[in-house]
Structure formats: structure tokens, C-alpha cells
Length: 113
Image 1 (cartoon, helix red, strand yellow):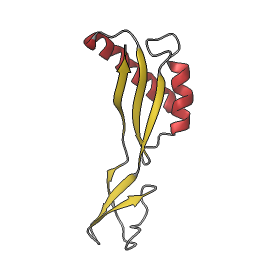
Image 2 (spheres, rainbow, N blue to C red):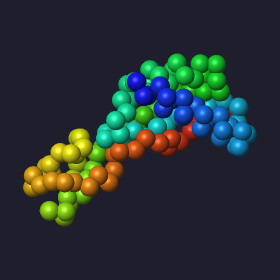
Image 3 (cartoon, rainbow, N blue to C red):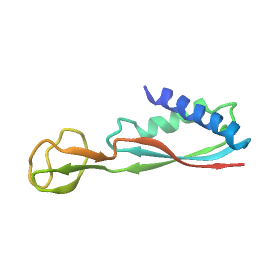
């Protein structure tokens, strides 16, 4: 389950930013998770609660913003929604598509005290 190591990395970022920005507590973490990122939002929720125990984010709520997968189809010159990598264009059926959104995971926003 790579979500555990992702949550550990998120906590590292929170701790580094706390030193830079001089805050003591994180009350909310907003994560953008793309549909094509290979990250399971429910696994992230589960792992996050375990990883943040005893940290500055111990009582933080995790808000996940799911980003749809999008790709550019050069055959029909359109930006299309896709549910998984390597599928054909839902408009014209051609391959390959160039993924241009929904393959990322990032910290979008923090609420701190």
C-alpha cells in the first residue's frame, strides 16, 4: 500500500512548512487526487489517520478533492474525460491520448493554528 508512504511524505511537508511559516497545529489538509494518479482516496484517509498520530496534524481533518482524468485526442482535436490510462478516445475511438489532467496528487490547501 503506497498510500502509507504518501501520507508520510505529506506529514513531512506539513512539518517543514510549520517551521518555515511558524504554525503549531494543522486543523485541515486539502489534497487533490487525480483519478489517474493510482492513489486510492479511501486508503489515503485510512493511512492519514494512522500516520498523523502524535504529530502537529493529529486532529486535522483530511479533505480529498477528486480530479477527473482528462486527455487530449489529436485525432478529433478535443479534450476528453477518461477513467483510466491507455483507453481509447470516448469521442472517436482513436489511440493514443495524451493525459493532461487527473494524474497528480498535491496538497492544495492547509488550515493551521
